[in-house]
Length: 280
Length: 334
Image 1: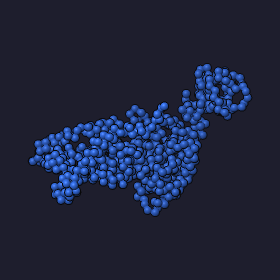
Image 2: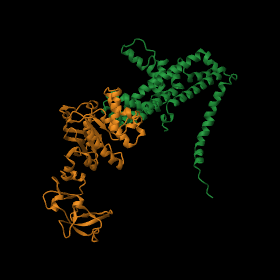
Image 3: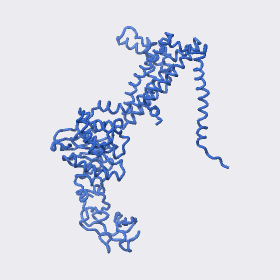
Image 4: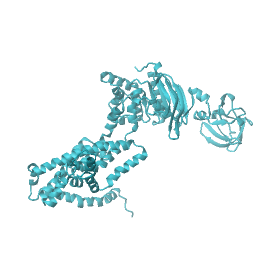
């Protein structure tokens, strides 16, 4: 007797390996971290009290939030312009620009951070040029501070912003802008009243993506901040690997996780997330 | 409500040319459009009709030539200054704006607002029969309704003229017929100049005051629908007007190629004016359509009404064909 084909069963069998891997190697460790944050060194919310009490944790959290917000804003503005140019470029140039964006995505963030290092440090290319031209006498402090961290993050995040922005823009019918012009809008009016509002879903999507990535970004801030401008990911690493303070480390990891989940929850109330990430 | 000062609105196009690389999209096109006229640009795709319309609208800058409106040179004027209403293929309604706001858009761009503007929007929507759809979004409307919103938006600001780029091509046949007559009614109601682009000759014939037939960037013939239908200037126009048969001089016995519609050819009792043999016979119920070839290989298409007796020719039969001289259209070229 032939067994009946069950599409439901096949579906689950296909999903199962990935689901198991996620459960064992992802959900389990993450829940362990959550658990540790309320059990080490002793059960209770003692670790979370540090959010209110610890001056250094407080300052680090604000730094993280500020850098993430500023870098998201900068990335979005720069990314929007690039996505706009790619959208309106002719085919050959479009492919070239796309390759350039993807190439920067494919190069390791580590390599890119070191590249900025070579450019920004006191005897780096930029300072040498500025001094060579006589614009400054002493090298500008562009390394190991918030500036270098911002530069590094914006550079690393740009492709992540450009891709969803571009995908939103190229789905806009170019006749809409032409129609607006024909109906009496000048270039600026057609852009702000028609093109820009239609790109807002892409702008939201890219903002969320970049902001969440920036919040937990490790390599670039760690290398370009040089331990002086510490963001949360690096702080957690120091707590766990150097100070061996699992309580504070896991508490901060939990805070990061909860903050991101809450942010997504609020945003999903405002906009349709499934549409943003291309499911609908 | 939508009248316009007449004599200032005569559009003149002189020697307009536009090339893309080696492709000549427009080749020294000259054309005048009278105020209040319904002019159709007719031609196959790639004939330059849309390029011509977009040049008139200001979206395409011609390489040579001049466009004037009431004597004023508008060749290099940006589209937003021309004040031409435009209906795009696919309508180009703003998806993030309601129907009201779509129709309001051109008024807003002209600094009109308040009760006065709202009244004009309501009037325009009433004119296209969509008074109750103002608060809807375009995606909630049917294709025909979207088409009407696009029309309302294009006429609400009392433009100098209305430019329409294949506005009905996305609709099914039945709706198309309905909207054709609505467009004609609208044209009479608002008294605006309409310039209408289509590749559909029956649409052009039924709606237009004049038709300009285009081919490879050139104007082939400009005239009233019956001019074009009864007196096509050349074989291309004749074919576009649905003429099936072309008899070269050596077969017609005259000096010109003769264009003959299928219904003008009839089966001769004897040898007839031209001899051929039947190569194809298709039964259509009310009529039977034949294709025959002459000895020199010229195809001839004709019809016979069904039920005309039993001795209808079969495939392979040798036949003779006749025609009346009044039905034959002599062509100027080949």
